[in-house]
Image: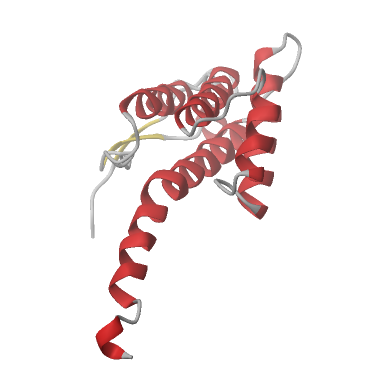
Length: 157
């Protein structure tokens, strides 16, 4: 059995309406393989979520996507075009491209007055963004190393 420390607050709807903030064990950290500026954007998104600032959380997820596009060499004027460029170049594909575009749309909703962002949408945005940057910066490199170890060498032929 592992203990946890959580905090719940009553914002007028009772404690049951507040999702607990987990303080121990500490949340997962983004890999150091992810560039520092992108880790910082994502960390701020997570802090916004923990503070129940759900609109701000999805806006920070969108900024994380923007930073990822820039870091990956995308050169277009807006995020939608940069995500398309990353798809066309093979840096993201299939489901990841779909996730990235929906994260962009969620971030847009968070950035515009009058649009609501639910706790569930913000949590999903964080999870999908983490998976996306993990795929781009961590899993691709690991797969390259794995593939290199398992490629038939000329002496095996």
